[in-house]
Length: 30
Image 1 (tube, rainbow, N blue to C red):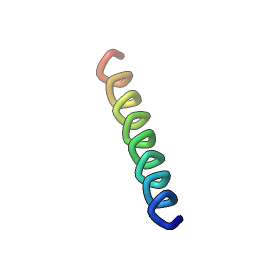
Image 2 (cartoon, rainbow, N blue to C red; image 1 turned 90 degrees about the horizontal axis):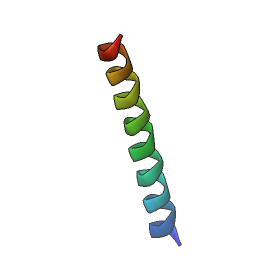
Image 3 (tube, rainbow, N blue to C red; image 1 turned 90 degrees about the vertical axis):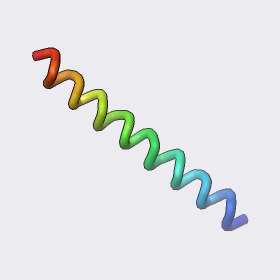
Image 4 (cartoon, one colour; image 1 turned 60 degrees about the vertical axis):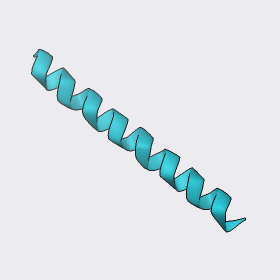
C-alpha cells in the first residue's frame, strides 16, 4: 500500500520537473 503511494509521489514529482523544463524552454524560445 505504502509503495504504491510512493510511486504516485514519484510520478507527481516527475511531472512537476517536466513542467519546469517546459517553462525553461519557453523562456529560451522567447
